[in-house]
Length: 148
Length: 148
Image (cartoon, rainbow over all chains, first blue to last red; front, top):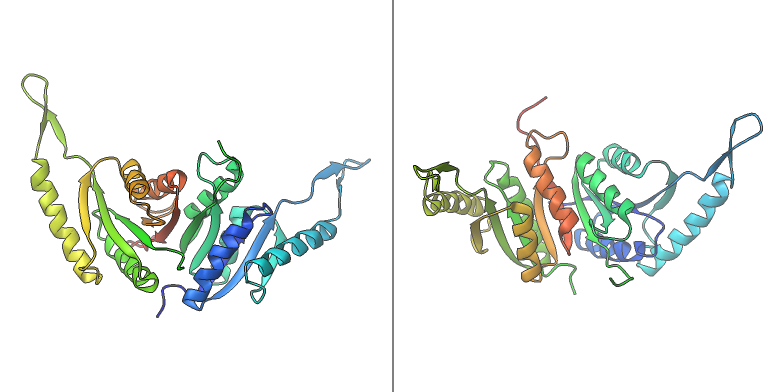
């Protein structure tokens, strides 16, 4: 039995996601694994309405559509057009870990910038997933495009 | 070109190391990768001698010999007898990351217990390696043998 049968790939909306997807594509192919790509996006920026209620500045479905378009383009670039993908709003660590548990995923692939990366948020996401996941986690090191 | 050509497997002396080694064996085989197993051990317990100097309670080479024997047994059990392995003394994160950098390693495999594991030290080692490594890191989730 191969080591990994069901793989969840977690990406953000950064340009570096393509690197994670390409690495994931090779791994999925190698293991002949079932796979899904998940982009957990921050909820749209909210503002207070006249009665103190929350009002989204952009509709969630508008943003979701744009993010899905971008993700789909990247999936094609990475040779992953045949793999299901989804954009959801929520807290990245919680959402990825819950999804992995529910789907009996045995490997989560996530991008990581490390402590010295310019994108600390993504670093902390990889870290949080590593802490909370019940399965193996592959952190794909993202090369910074900005030197220094 | 396969995703990973040179793999470093970092283990501790716990019984769960065998699980990490078995998972690593499958991955090495799949990638036909060059690999090495590294056990970074804590320096032997030290005591103060009569003139305030440090005195090791056991000689480093005695401990190293026992750790090497145990590691070798586990390597055989995991089907990794053909892979080079080494026991060194030092700080786990620093030693593993330095070794990976020097050897142009492209994947580090390390065991991880997660935040809720009973062995927080190993959890923090995986975490530190994830932060500091310049290459991809696969954290193999170790199943606790103690329930609850």
